[in-house]
Image (tube, rainbow, N blue to C red):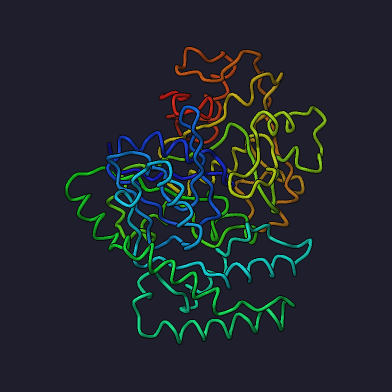
Length: 431
């Protein structure tokens, strides 16, 4: 196997966990390069469902080393909970997992800031998960963050006090929230020192040596490309770079170590939280869905966030979004998930372009207000009544389903190389 970057190329929730888990047995290393516990990767193997937030999806495989890179924010409480969950399931996670010593720690004051800011925004809120990821990355950029390696520093106590003075001033004076106690922060740091510091490692060195030895590496992203802080629907984005290039900075590897980029997307589109969504049909309030197609997708696709439980907004496949993601990521192959959710629809639509003020747009407008005003240009294809759930070969797919896949390839200018037809590991078609 070659070294592969696996990333979502919509607004997240594309089914990355299953695809990574499927690839992991063929890989020697699976390395997570960005995000934090705001990601939720659901793995379904037989009757066992596992939701991972921090730990790479390769952790369930005996011969695979799992790495958490420096580009990832680590919440000590949540990561230890995840480790203990896996240990209780007899997964030898302590032997299979290593954490970059350069990882930034998500601490109680990050979560407090995140929640208070969202509440203060009211209807203008971004729709964060409230897990403290944004404030953690903010501290990293401002050079006041605390990393895993800093738990051994003589200056740690002074830095805690300095950070708390700043955060508690912001919380009380500007946001009307309660202060964060020093005891809460110390508890998180002591937990990290006891349980996580023994797993700390020089991840770039490990990857260099593994690559030199000819081992195959899977670089695993968290949120989707349209949530990238630079290339997504800003400001309704996450706080890190989610594109394939972030694998290099978030793990400390060079571009020559990447052989292919697998872009993962659903056969329709979903989004959680606020922000533009040109093809949206249905959300928690119902929205405009005269044919009930969006409701069909939400109900049949069980569209609720694995981490937050929030209902996802649903709509037709947006080829403009996927085209954009293919370009900025250098995607070499598409992995399409949840094709079976479209079973039973009389017609299936593809958004092949946008119109703004009567003018056809060549790409996604960078301005969110303009994107909100865009009218999707649809191409309608016939649906199918046959059941595709659990299909394992192309021959089992209805003619109309195969026609949809062919059209997606044409419009997105990228081949479909993998197709998921259900949640289980065996519900897959390699093309």
